[in-house]
Image 1 (cartoon, helix red, strand yellow):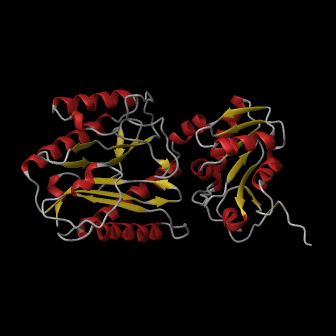
Image 2: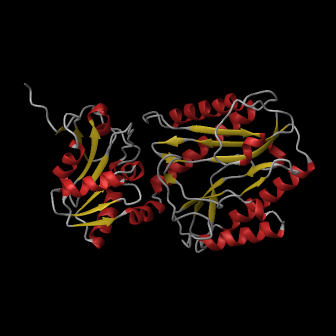
Image 3: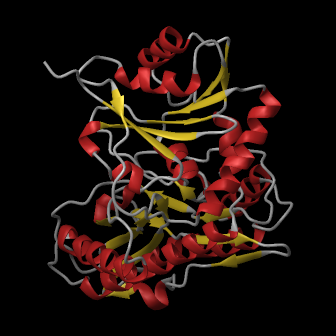
Length: 401
C-alpha cells in the first residue's frame, strides 16, 4: 500500500501577488521586530486578515484550518490539499500542504516549522478553544504570547503601496455608486439595483487589476424601512416614490476593503426627511474637518456628539463615526484600535486611513423615518487629510429615479 504523507509541497505555476515582494519583506521585518521585543520565537497566524497581510494569501476555509508560520528566518503558509498549488501561487514565501489522511496533520505541518518548546505568538482574538488546546498539545510551547494587538497596530499604518490599493478601491466603489444611481427606478427591486452595482464594480476591478482573483465584492442596497440598519441585507422590496434609500458599495481587491455609502431618495424628499438628511450631511462635513494628525478618536467622537446634541438628534445615532481600512471584510478582520468611538483614544497619524460615516436612524412612524448615512474615506496626511471618495453626497445629487 502506498504510504500517504502527512504533508508535502505542491508548487506549480507562476506566482502572482497583490504587492511586490519588497512590500511583504518590509511587513515581515516589522513583525520580526515585534517578535524580538516580546521574545517570540515563532508566530502562528490563523486569521484571514493577518495571513493575507503578511503573505498575500487569502484563504477559503470551508471548515478547514489554514495558517501562516513566521520565524526569524522563515515565512510559511499552511494550506489544505483541496487547494493544490493555488496557495503557493498566491503567497509570499514558502507553502506547505497538509493532507486529510490523518487527523491534525495541520498541526504537524506547523510543528515542522516551529519545533517544540518555543515561545509562540498567536492571535488570542481569533484562535478557538479547540485550536488553542491543539497548539499546546502539538507545539508544547514554553510560553504563549498574544500578538494580535501588535499586528493590528502595524496594520493601521499604511505603506505607499497600500494607499495606492485603497485609492483604487475607492474609485471602484464610486463606479458602483454611479451604476446604482442609474438603476434606481420606481418599481425596481433592491436586488436588481444591487446586482447592477456589483457587476459594474467587478468589471472595473478586472480592468484595473487583470491578474487578480475576483471574489467577495458586494452591495447592500436598502430602501424604506430596510434602511434602519447599516448592515441590513438586500431584499426583493420594490422601490416607491418618496422612498429613502441607502446606497452601499463594497469592492474587495485582494482582501482590501473599501466602501461608499450614501443617502438617496426616489424622485422626491419630504421636508421632515430633508431636515434630518441635511443635519447628517452637516455632521459628515464637520467630522471630516476634524480628521487631522494629532486628533484623538474619542475627542473627535465627542465633538460630533455635541453637534448632534445641539440639533436634538443625538438619540438617533446608532454606532461610531468611522473606522480604519486595509485587509478587512464583513466576515474577517478589523482594526478596532482605529475607530471613532468614545472608548478609543488612538491619536491619528499620517499614513492612517479612516472613514467618516455618521448615521441617524429615525424610527418608523415618525416624520423623516429611515436611516441616513454618508461615508467618505480619508487619508491622514502630514498637514490634514485627503478625501479619496468622489461620489457626491447630499440632496442636490441624490434625489433620483
